[in-house]
Image (cartoon, rainbow, N blue to C red; front, side):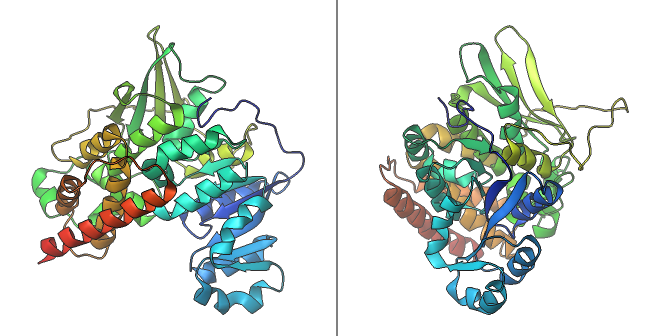
Length: 397
């Protein structure tokens, strides 16, 4: 059974209680839009944020969850009196215990910080709607080991992996399946010239042509790091060898992924580029809802273009995939290096081209390892960030 097996999945009778970790971020707010459209089937039972307490308070006031969680204790005090009029406030690391208060957990936390939510949800035997790909990038082997002895299962929220899940629904990856094809929009720089890329900065990187996402993942899309991370994620989610996963550029972003079978046929999942569709599929699984977010405008003219990735101008794609193939601690190191680098890039400290250069330099400092515990994953993440910070300071100087 792989991480996303639907075997044994049962529908919840009545309203499904949802715990959203990262409710004030891009995925979290879109999840609340889905819940708003499905009041008879979904309930926001738990809302958790790190420190964006003003937005969290507004959400809590509307949805009236049983529990509101704030990881930052100082920020929590700013809204305590208001929240406690209608919800129980949980503060600090105690928020992670709230996974047990819901029927399904949505991990919408950005970055490595989401690993704790993933491990807690699996440990509590809760279905996990996973938007936080970094959990699998950094600790995929350990996550799958924990899943193997849990009643939990993962419902992917990334549009590409949701698409694969739907293409494979009812089946696991087997001898009849030959290849996964992950599509990438190409990001804002797909048609950019080398000279344009040489001077690209934050504003250009954040101008995504088709998707509405948070700043970190939008930058990752611009470098194609995001697609490399999704290759690693697909490997762990579906148990597919790296050599059987292909990336293609698809600027229209309506074919979200494809599965090719040994008889030469290919199944593709097609929908509008709207994250709420994948979120809805995960939260309502095994059911589907009539979408208020729009459907494809058939038979209007639709052009579907596919291109090979330009790995010369976007070398970070190969860097990410090679880290995945190296296995052990390499994906964790790469992920931490990328998070650190993107944070400095978003602060305007260097140009877009430097991102891939810093990632390449950081990977040269990685010493092959095989973490056997979550603590070792945390230690490796910390060391990668330290090394990458040191490299960045040299770049800035």
